[in-house]
Length: 505
Image 1 (cartoon, rainbow, N blue to C red):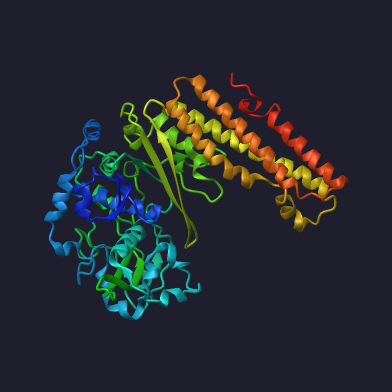
Image 2: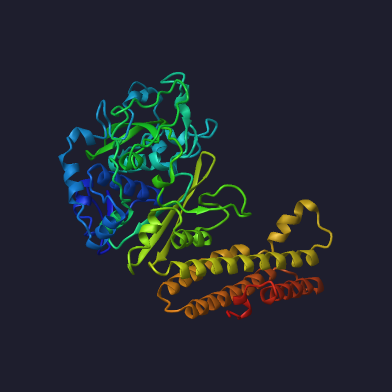
């Protein structure tokens, strides 16, 4: 497992060593945000399966403050039979479905299929020539990619033929349980602290640890017909759901290292909808227009995560979702914590990118942080709307007789919103940092005023830069003057947030 030591070095440890030395390590350090979350999920599952977890919220608070040892989890793992953790066991391969073995040589593809960032579109018509390459993937990297697939794999159709293998529903890939919402991790100063912060207390049995497809208290789904979703039976089960049927073929590289050169990837387990207590980190937000059911927040290609920070802080400030992660964090006195939000952006079956952001949190400051986040987001949104209107004004003067098909492209020429959004993120995070240390509401208001001034100044400059492309003639001068005048009017008009008008009373 790739980890980051407290002195900044990156190293690779076994799972046992990672748990034994969790207090010496700063964090898990995987190649992507999604892979990092998947590894943390697996470590949490090991803690639950070994009984290394608190049973009540009060005990959890003591666990966090006293930095309770995770040695029992390491001992439990060390005492398991070695074949249980064999990635290439002939009948019980770790995290995989051995029922695919008869078809691996004929229907398997190169290991790029296993890595979400490399697989490309699962669609059968997509160009998959890169999957024909059998360049070996190191076994450790294959294990991490497998965990990410189980947690985040996007929906679509697998490349394996169900008619020629286990059944028609083998090709139907369901979205992973974390692939459709934001996963929020509370980060501590060490890996041990991070694990304790995210070990939700439970007095229930841990449930099954999904070590392999072929070993389970109950028969797993078949592939001849679409199965019913199954109910999670405990936290160890939850964090090790086998969201994919996967089988990997081992090989040796030229230097004698164990690697994977062929992979089959197909449909995995289907779950019943998860109840709230099995998503204790979920951030809930209503639709933009206030209609429709409240659902767990999911990432959006149109909105950066920081623009939704107010919803995250609202979860802590309102504390109306029962004993969830945010209710527990609010009980930790003045301990500073970082909230790391991670989400997957996918277009149908194709992974587009991982999105992640980190937000500061100090118990007792949740209402101030929510206020700052709400006002900060509102100010940024308002300035963006001002830039949009100024671009429209410039367009109407510059193109008096436009073709309808050209309108959007012509307006985009003067629209400085992309520059504004890119530049607003750092001031917003600085605003939140200042709020965590502010001693009064007046200091928060002053920080918001400085933030508004910075964003407004940037907007003026971004618009000027866009307008520099106008010709040096009367129409160009008129378009420039009217756009700048409109921007200034809107930034300081009656509808502007008070901070933009210099009034925080």
